[in-house]
Image 1 (spheres, rainbow, N blue to C red):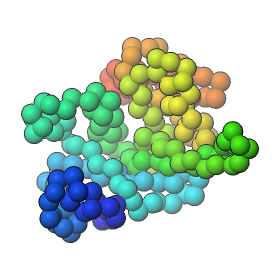
Image 2 (cartoon, rainbow, N blue to C red):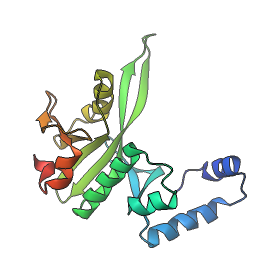
Image 3 (cartoon, rainbow, N blue to C red):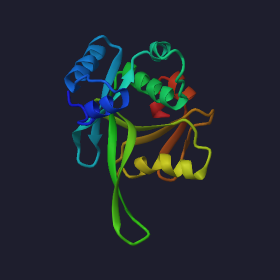
Image 4 (cartoon, helix red, strand yellow):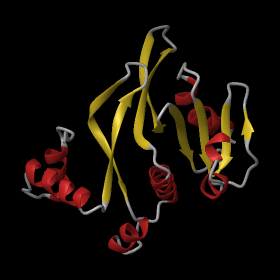
Length: 193
């Protein structure tokens, strides 16, 4: 398992601890072996290869996570993302986190490259779905931000944004489907809507 190279330095500086990177790696592996957390690898969509770091971890049971934290950090955006990840895994999908490069021109006319994240790439056999978890898309700026990574993928697989709000299933002019988390969780064929 590959970890970010700065994990030890960050842990030491924030927690002022002398726990080594190997010890942290072992703890993470123990948590994975005990089915408490699950790892999602990063996948470069355009390069079609896995990126070693940084990995993302999701809790198998968000209730245990909340209890361990004493219900102090109830971040609905992270919880919704974790729940979507768990649902995809329970439906049999292998789930990765996607990275896609986007090239833009800045105000000075220079080309800049940005890496955008796709929350989930769900694969099952020949099926693939690009899924973005967006707690809210209340402004046009937020809609543009959430769609940017999906719009940068130039293949024919389905692109979906799951939102917390109760909305009907819609598709925009770029073919991106928007659905509520309730439709996603309660309808077995929600990815095909």
